[in-house]
Image (tube, rainbow, N blue to C red):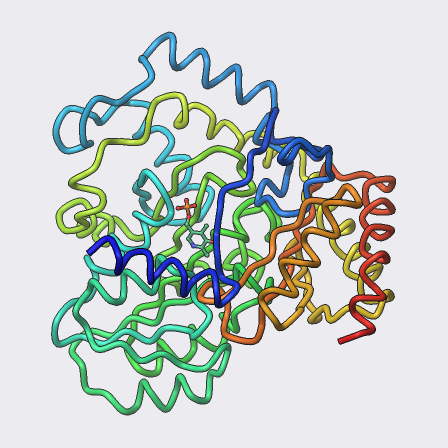
Length: 387
Ligand SMILES: *Cc1c(COP(=O)(O)O)cnc(C)c1O
């Protein structure tokens, strides 16, 4: 038995896919200490730089003193506090829906929402590059899963027409987590209306980043009322942890009654609920969003100018495609030697042969930081030219 585990670990190592944890010291700021080396952080999802914001830390500390650190139970048992309901009302207003429901993480929110909305005899239509939590939700649901090629609405239309399943759910990331590109949400909503399907949009990387008030891509494209389920997380741009689903009241009622990852788990901890005061910062300081998008465009241009393979896009996720997994690890190590921390992303997180450096920008990076990043990436050029 143990031998088999050893064999499996050896295979992972031999394929260049070994994963291990790095030690990051200090607060999650623009510069961190990684395994003892001081480096510019270019791989967090803390896009607005809020994870160590003093006002949020203070709100969390106050809530811990007043309500304690843990909710003590599932919301349906004894864990539902006024704080939860207040934040849900706020999130519903932010997303322009009747209601919202908190989950402990985005992973819980996705598997909970998908499995609550569709089951045996139903059909799910899922973009090939959707996040792992969506893939797992699809597997758990027991519905027929139609995976359509990335952003391919022609294939999606064909798949929708091919089924007479009772309930149909189209599910997509709005901003794809490893590529940073946008889902064709307008076309998807139109197809859903033609084929009587529900639409679920995962705004993990768009919440706090896109849209006039930072509500996400649904807001940016004016698709309010046409998306059945908007999932968002509090752990990325909002700098906290936790997630939510915003939808019509009846959809939220279905989740309260059927989403097992909501029913059978301890409620989001009071300090985290209080730290969602990050929404105040998003509302009050729109310049964080504009600065983030400007800096992202700036870094994308700098990396492209170096001759690196950077797919076109807009927003803080700037992938640098390497191809080979071990090569991607070498690039990551070279960058750390030059004071830049970027993780290599390898299969199965991304398709085979597309290992990459997933570079992410923060609103709190300044010009000197981006110049430092460009200089470090320039040190990769001899490596890149040799490919
Ligand atoms: C990070 C992420 C999730 C999961 O959110 P957590 O709150 O970190 O569990 C879901 N969907 C996408 C697209 C993500 O990038």
